Image 1 (spheres, one colour):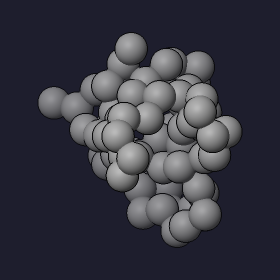
Image 2: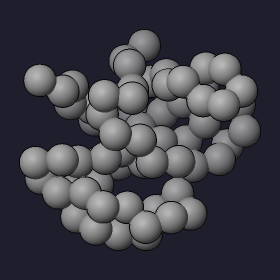
Image 3: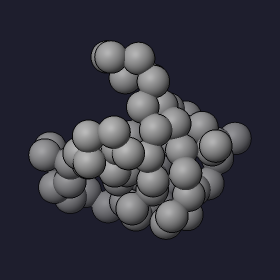
Amino acid sequence: MTSEFRKGDKVRWNSHGGQGEGEVLRKITSDTEAGGRTVRASEQEPQYLVRSDKSGGEAVHKPDALEKM
């Protein structure tokens, strides 16, 4: 079972440069453009738009890639 996250949750994830930390901006449950790419998502397989505390950049991650802080 994957975790559920809400807007404002503080999370961390593994990135190319180590570990990233930031905040969940929104849950994505349909195909859309976000974080600079096309996101394939559904109610059964959501993804999350997050903002990095370090860079301020936005990215999209699957729930199993995120960990609540």
